[in-house]
Length: 94
Image 1 (cartoon, rainbow, N blue to C red):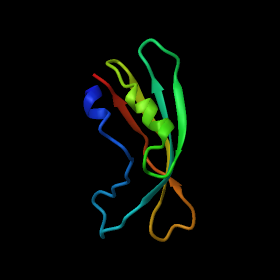
Image 2 (image 1 turned 90 degrees about the vertical axis):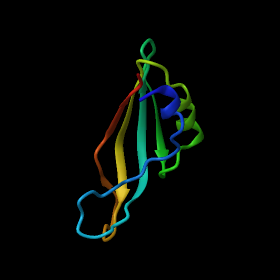
Image 3 (image 1 turned 180 degrees about the vertical axis):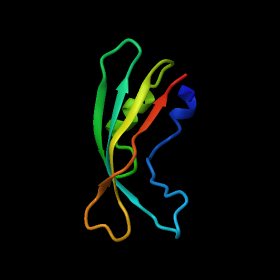
């Protein structure tokens, strides 16, 4: 993904593919880790689906060769009593 395209994102959403009915899950938190091409990793824990100020700051730093890990994504789905961990997302900036 290009840096300009990545910088347009402002939230993480959960989509349930090939599910029997239309169920909406809500992101409760996630961790964003930025591994810059020539810098130490930086990370932030984000509460909710929308990017916090700190998360937005890391996203705006996107440059060619960076890798972003959206990890420990927690979502609450219908019928859940507590949030559950869902698949991670890896984005390579190129």
